[in-house]
Amino acid sequence: MTRDHKTRGFTVQGRGAPPAGNARYLLRFDDICPNMDWRNWREIEDTLLSHGVKPILAVVPDNKDPKLIFDADPGDFWDRVRVWQSWNWTIAIHGWQHVYVNHNAGIMGLTKKSEFATLPRREQSTKISQAVNKFKAEGVLPTCWVAPSHSFDEITVEVLAENGIRAISDGLWSWPHGDSLGVTWVPQQIWSTIRPMPPGVWTSCFHHNGWNSGQLHHFKDCVARFSHLTASFDEIVTEFQRRQITPGDRRRAHLDLLWNHRIRPRLARLKGYRPA
Ligand SMILES: [Zn+2]
Image (cartoon, rainbow, N blue to C red; front, side, top):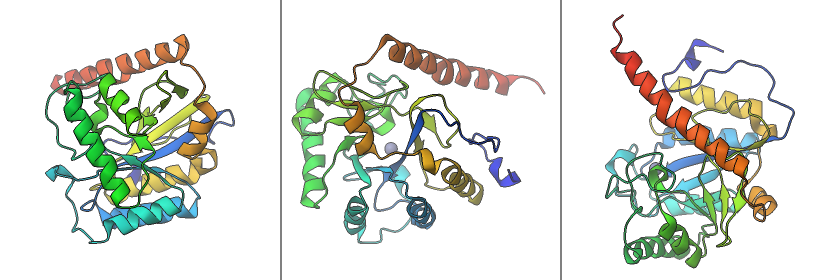
């Protein structure tokens, strides 16, 4: 590890060999939109291609979130999306406009801001059908749902199924499962890094806007170490769509939520107030 890896917000891992067990990894990039950070993206794309990794790209259909504006719009965004699709990369719908309208964390309970959770069915249906129609008008077939800030509810899932989106990338379980609507849930439990994990399917989520050289280097290092353990989203959905959720899945997700998303952030905040 070089000092570049000691970047704030990144988990620094030892160089030990990844586990030889049944851990498999998916890589997901959020906030893909015309004004994203293209300078970093060029290197990310080269890295993914050279290691044969097929990521999930969460594309914002009609971005209106000023926080996602980093670079100039290259003018050929949807051409690029079609090229990614031609490489069998998974194109996910990342909300509609990435604009939060309330402070509800939805059924995942992770982040208290939402573009969908608690909205009436009619409103959710309008947003999702607009998103799907936008993709289809651009010749892109969306196969997966990635909610902005992980926030959505049961109505969202029903509306997604009605619109032909039958796979969701979210949740803290160790393994994917299918539900009674025929929707396959592929969990997403890791952020900004990849690390050795026990048997399971582990999705690591990256937000590349504004990465510095250390963060980019860390990503490349992760891909070099774990690419042989990655799978494509389609492979995972096909394999697990009939698997049912288990009490063990629920327990693992509950403990992860409690420890990593409730207790640890509070401890970290408390630490900040300690006198030196
Ligand atoms: Zn987002």
